[in-house]
Amino acid sequence: MGPSTSGLGKIFRSARQALDLTQGEVGRAVGYSASAISRIERNQMRVDLATRLRLAQELRIPPERVSGFPAAAGPVIATVGSVPMPDEEDAMRRRNLLGALAAGATAVVTGSGTAAALPAAAWDLGDVLFRLPSAGPAPLQVLASGTASAREAFTAARYSDLGNSLPGLLAAAEATRDASAGRARQQANAILARAYVLASELAAKQHSDAAWVAADRALAAARASGMPIPVGEAARVLAITMRRSGSCSSAVRFLTTEAAALDPAEERTGAVRTTLILSAAYSAASGGDRTTALALLDEADESVERRPQAPGGLFTVEATKTQVDVYRIGVHNTLGTPDEGVELARGLNIGLMPTAERRARAWTDTARMWHALGNGQEAFAALRLVEQEAAQEVRRPALRALTSNLLYSPARPPGLREFAVRTGAVPA
Image (cartoon, rainbow, N blue to C red; front, side, top):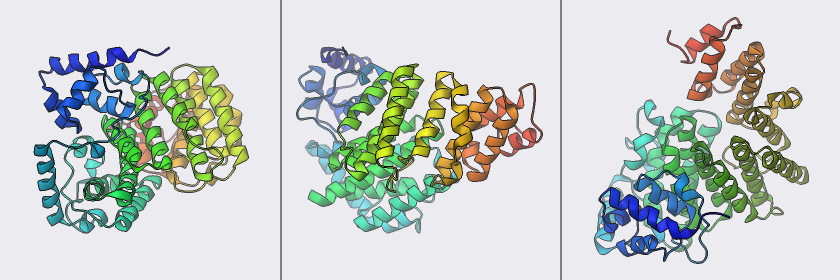
């Protein structure tokens, strides 16, 4: 049984009081009224995971303390945008929107103006998410095109390009959402969710805490859109941040619950459902639960056998047999049984995977497998293929650490030192 919701309000109240914040101050920070915060603290309003994580972030509560509570039932405040604002805050938002209108959105989205011209180093998003540039509303078609271009940069592993474009894209999408109503608002929320999914993916690659912020915002916008596919995509990246914080069992429960809400018979939602199951399998392995991890992988296998070709458009994971096998290798690495992935690795045709980012990730899992088995030569060969597929991928902190470990192993493969210098694993 999970923890009772009766203790959740006390956690929030104690943390708020310890920080000497009023209910109004907390409400303004997360987009709620003081009375809503009061009801949450008195356990008179049950809130969903995204809301709990937003409050935890503001109140400096470890996310695992609030993530394991039962999901909200009945009406829930799911997004900042859906909550009526106090008069003062509403007036401030109107002033901000009017200021953004003067900036113009097209330059922000396309990169033809200065708002998106951030230095390349800014692609570790960090505080950028809290200081988005000014932007005005943009046509939905322009935003959709900008998001498609951002996704293309991610899947091609052009992370610097993506990091430079995301702040402007997010600012324009938020301004458009705030200025829209009805169906247009739902569509703007879906675009905003997809942009924040990319921001979370990018931050996660740098082991940045900004991944939490972006994933939370992605899920809030996705739920406001009412569209199941953005919800599934956002749920996956939020669960990744939960897993990386150590809340593996909570991530598994969250992912499997979200997967169960998607129709496996419908082509696109079925593909998203499979990606959630794959992420749940990896989360279970990260928590040491071999039985659950392998059972979820078997379920994903059955799913792709029923529908072998997944549609395009998913952010990082395609629902294919090859992708399931790559996840299986990663799960065995995580469980400490890398030898069980060797035959799978030898049978993979990584070159057929659809994007450079996914091919690089597959070679990364292969490199980790060989490293765990003490075969430095094969591990280095896989790392060189990562670099061949995606030069920026091999400079990620996790890959630099793997390279450094190989460099100081007893048997150093020829050329490894030069590779380590070239990729930033060691100083020149």
